[in-house]
Length: 342
Image (cartoon, rainbow, N blue to C red; front, side, top):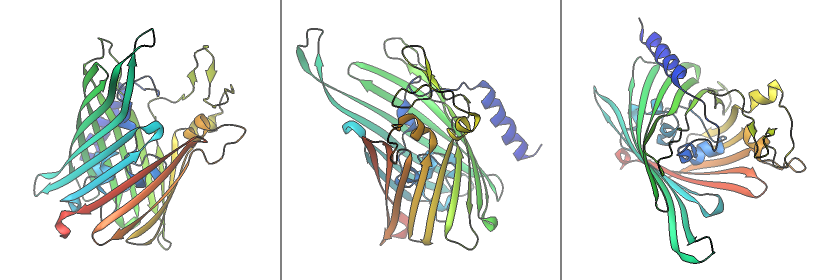
């Protein structure tokens, strides 16, 4: 039995025991927040881009993208999110000969401070809410073209006096042909469970299966990525509080989505313009985001995203902007470097 057969068997076995989750029906949903400016600009998720120079931020989306050339790489990310929510991501990688490559990252989200009141609207002081994940990653090449990786994520969540601990795991696979400018990634994200719960209420993890493909044109500075997400659940419609089914349009329009619309809700498209090694411009489109958060009478640019990156001295600076709806845009800031360059 070849290593490729083993990979397929593992992926299928995990798929069979996994259950799909819809947004809002699972705990620790902050694990799905996009941390990287570049990934944010490419539509919010990407599991297949494997640069020759390596971007450590992509390891958050697929642990198999952690490569030996990322030895001593550092990544800092900050996102001033919607409604005064802030979150960040810090990562470091180290390669050990004959062992593989290890990564350490911290992902946290701060929801801010809130005024605590009772049922009589009397103020009882302030409280806060925050969530943290420590991410330990290991990846190794199996063949010149195939890599596998795994991330283990201890999680701590605190909302006022309610706390929860959990443990999640990601399994990733990457196939790359640099001579063909082609890369493919598969990742099963957030398998695990709560260790302790909020008030003895057990909740599911935000598990997801994602598959992505990236192809760079041979004679033009463009690279295209297509990522399929939420593959553990075909039907992405949901029930409203009045028990009617909706596709998620913000004006409350009820409609049964066609096969093509359901298919596109699983797809994220990313396009990169790469005129030079130290500069890039990125664009993305997330169909599900547009359909669920766009206002039908004025869709504007909901679901679209863009960004750019440039190198100064030994640092790569990146910015990404993602439009969720008319009243909400997220801005992503990233800085990456490698200590070995100093």
